[in-house]
Length: 113
Length: 113
Image 1 (cartoon, helix red, strand yellow):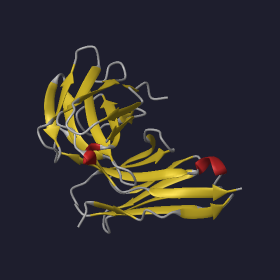
Image 2: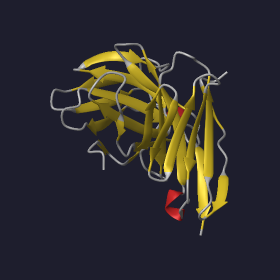
Image 3: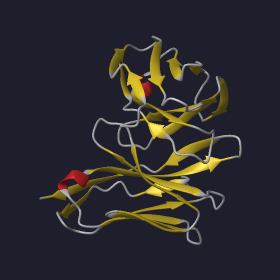
């Protein structure tokens, strides 16, 4: 079982739709969770960073972490064509003196005008 | 813009050759991590350097090595290149070794023929 599972899609939605992106993870010790956006041929750009369970909102983006079910979600409201990108969920394997990110495969999102 | 830069942008090498990729971290960031992203996959952790010492390593063979310099620059060296080494190589900088946001550069795309 992979440590972070993410459906690679692709996912295609019309402009203005609400988008739901999801990941599951296997290790209950993970505490930090991130969503990165990656445009074609670019490096990942941090969208949301959350610690432990709960919701975090930033403009049109909401990140949710449910540690009881080991489930993380990203919601995009009023999606725009400029949101078309690959979305990567990640968690951090943090051992107190070193932390490395563990990524899902990424979900490719296309928002059609 | 994260302030993390990488060079070169693209590189083509042949099997068996050696390659050096370079990264310039954000000013003040003591930690640099390197990731390999194969096509259609999420980034995979190679290793992390903190204050010029290797501080953690993923599941990569010793022919992957690195250096970090006091001026916030770093290198990834790969010896005896194999076809499977073709990927996007990303560096990410952060202030702390863990529990901290990692900011990615745009990556170097390496093609091994």
